[in-house]
Image 1 (spheres, rainbow, N blue to C red):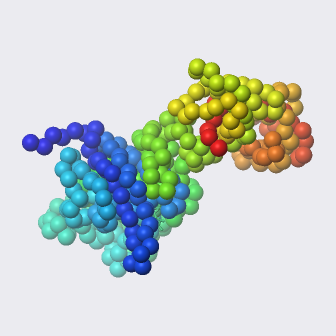
Image 2 (cartoon, protein in one colour):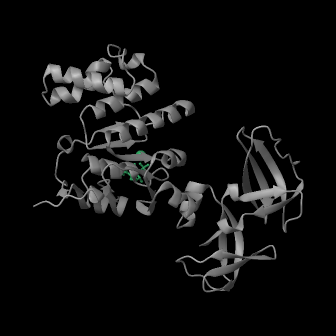
Length: 365
Ligand SMILES: Nc1ncnc2c1ncn2[C@@H]1O[C@H](COP(=O)(O)OP(=O)(O)O)[C@@H](O)[C@H]1O
Ligand SMILES: [Mg+2]
């Protein structure tokens, strides 16, 4: 008998996709990735353009056949199941609505193909239209809706199939900033309300951080790290992840001493300790010291480190400072508190830089 396990609901094992162009050139788009997704979770594949996110999603949907590896759903191998029978609708960046069909007909399309009765179709379409706030727009055509509304139709069209899993490929990328935030809240609300498992692709870190239960960071076809948004943000396991998700500053440092629990590094003649990780370092090694912009403080009071202010940018809720430091630049971000004046520094002014040292991490160069 099949053993069901909600913690191992959708499982990708050693999944690989090699594209070849017929002229002997091969591209390994997805390189031996393994991933276990829990039922009901919102899981995001996050990474730079070209890292293999869409290809992974298309293999899960069945649009693309894997070169190696297995995909199992509820402990059932689905490698050779046709896309239609997987019942994992995909929501695309381009909406992909039928322009000559009304909103009602667009949403009803998949149900018609499944040959459901008119009565059932009417009820189900009405239910999802309500859920994603499309009531009153059913008789319009896609061209008569805004981008945000069109994306809600695409979402309704997926939801109406009562899928176990919905796949999203950068669904918000065509929307303006404000609508993007509204629509991501909407998607998350519906996903949670219906207990649907979501596999979501984006290159936008704030989207991934705000929506996901688990984030899968991808780099060059491989998985770089998997974890909750907080785990990934607070404990990036590589300089790639630290840079990609936290916009970390990297400072040149040198290892001066290796202790049993910590490593001492030196910057500008100042020594301090950082926590030891799995990576091995040796004394005298040049390393990249990473620190997030929000853990950098600047002031005119002496603190031990000196830098030169390059540019300060007031951005409303935060102010961003670019500081020349150790022949390079670092960014400091300060939150602005309502009613309090923002610190102003002059361009080119000597400033003192302080770090919340407990947030330092070192990486290999
Ligand atoms: N049909 C294809 N034929 C050849 N190469 C492809 C094809 N689809 C994607 N690729 C290549 O595979 C890599 C990963 O692409 P993709 O999965 O679209 O990345 P992402 O969605 O993360 O931007 C890229 O180098 C891309 O050029
Ligand atoms: Mg893509």
